[in-house]
Length: 435
Image (tube, rainbow, N blue to C red; front, side, top):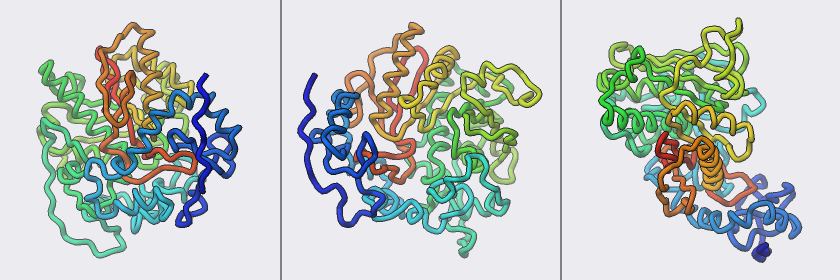
């Protein structure tokens, strides 16, 4: 076995950093004294922990993590997110410990769905935040997202137009902002990452399918588009916002004629509260122009929910309709063995899926596990594409253009870390590909 590269003994907390950002040992969590001499991506309290981490798998990942760390500056501003007015505080200052998530939220702190974008409500179980009707009406949403102001400030009278879904999906936050009429002061990119990733993946997948097969209206299944979101957590408290974003993104006859007239989103996960009530939203007052989006919640692991029998408690809300797409935000596949039977269910369904994770290495490990499970089903993928910054020879992932535009890096790694930051897509009959 290779010996670990010699650790650099160096000060681990810059004077400007907050106490919370001081490095922690990757193995035991104690205050760190040294970093890996190869990648500088992990810190350790003592050489014993460094050697233990090396033996537990870091030896194989070190060179990849070194590339990830080296790409930190490029990742921060990738896809032109530095054009957003609040970008530097949310990305650079939070990453370096000069600001907190609360600072980055600005006037949106503690308002509606933004309550889940910092740690102030972390003790409240997911799906249990009290809902304020004033935070959820169309006027408030337009104030928050179109103009970038909270209801407590005087809002500009802004006339915006939203374009129909086109043949080419939005590729960046700036394109999505322009399409939806959001101002660059809007902090929408802090709360709509999972929703925007869903929109982009649906359009990419379903419009491509339409081109190949000439289908329309959700493959003829009652004009519905069915989306499964696996592992929902904070999305449960943001369900109304999630539905509003999808409905606004898909306004116009182009979507309704070519894809679907109604959208069903089924959020599945252990964090779904029992008795969680469905949420229904439509963007604006013109019912003929925007699809109705309904969000359902299903408690349990995905593979268990899919195979569940109808009970009096869950009657009418089981996952009876085959999904058109599956979305796995910040999945953590490498951290939880329970994902393996879920992946098997997805593979059997032959449904396109998108998977994201916090770091490039976590996404690569997830892609490797996915490929391994696919091989058991004799679904041999074609040769993968490589992505210069984040790909490996076998398992390539990509930086998600719709990642949450705020650093999520803790004190246990120096690698770029963002909610929904990196990912891949599963294309039945093709294999694992970068986003």
